Image 1: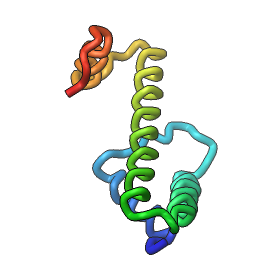
Image 2: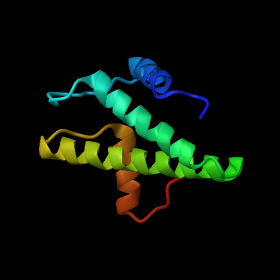
Image 3: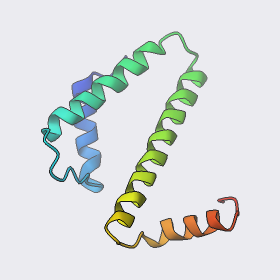
Length: 104
């Protein structure tokens, strides 16, 4: 794997500057959580060493899409639990899904 977990964790932290993560009151240090995730992803990428480039990109895209979906679901659940409204974009998407319309 061309990137080391420490480098990936640093890149994750950089990305968070634009879109911060609310770690709330989790009983774990943020840097340790980043390192844990970065290590796991680097191990996953290394396990795909024999995959073709296309298969590797497709697999990583599928994993990313699953994580974004999971994040969306957890975010909406959290907002609902606290009686808070979702953002306009999320509400529009959910409205279309309720009507059975395919997203664009």
